[in-house]
Length: 313
Image 1 (cartoon, rainbow, N blue to C red):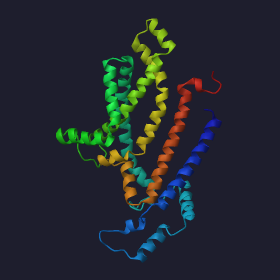
Image 2 (image 1 turned 90 degrees about the horizontal axis):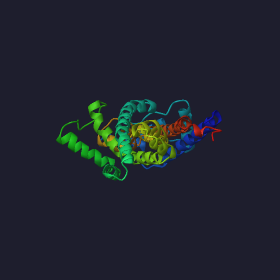
Image 3 (image 1 turned 60 degrees about the vertical axis):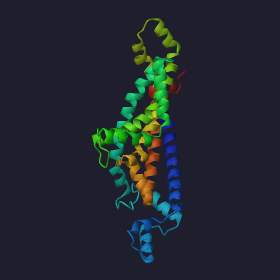
Image 4 (image 1 turned 180 degrees about the vertical axis):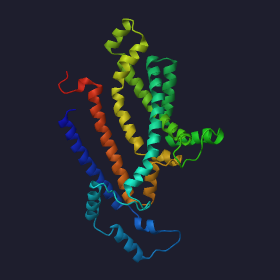
């Protein structure tokens, strides 16, 4: 991509972010429930209407929709996403507090996934229609069919409760508590990526240059590492980019199952508490991640495949 195309994509990103922010704000505005009542509700205490009205005015929730949105969007442009109702701290600060847990979980899950899916996908392609291929394809089909939260509960029961190899409860970011949620995510992603790696490798193995290299006596290991894998990884870059965005957005179900302190668990709690500024900040974070990663993936294509450069044949 040249500079003009990058600028064009950046403009599209900004328009997409504005649209996402507006739709999110609309949904929060139209959603049932009163965030002020949720904020002031403590046990069986009855809050007076005067207190509710005063708090609503302090938060600016008594203003018309367009004024609330313009004020919030203007603050976002200045780096201020508002104040979290439940945490009583700025939204950006709350996101930064939960980001390390999500980064650790996402990075660990990606490493585990690559260590599982790449070798299995290559083996399945090299030994096509043999017992190894049938076994790997059967396991990957089973992995795709199983819900990730169910896999997490099974791992908790077997590895955590019965064998006591890992802690059952989370709550803090640590290596031993990270293994089970990361493994759960890796199993779910590996089942999909194994099939994708197999398809990409099979397509490359059928190319004329690979057939020619094999007839000239080149060892299969050299062909795989020097020719097949570099070309087969290109179609996987898009999937990998989407997976990174999905993981960095916080995998809410897995984080809730394992009580992992990440963005997904934070988002679920914010929705339960009607913490509108935090939910809006979280959705905006997701939108920035996906649009930014998609742009980086498109730019990386130019370097991974020189044929995509402008003017290439």
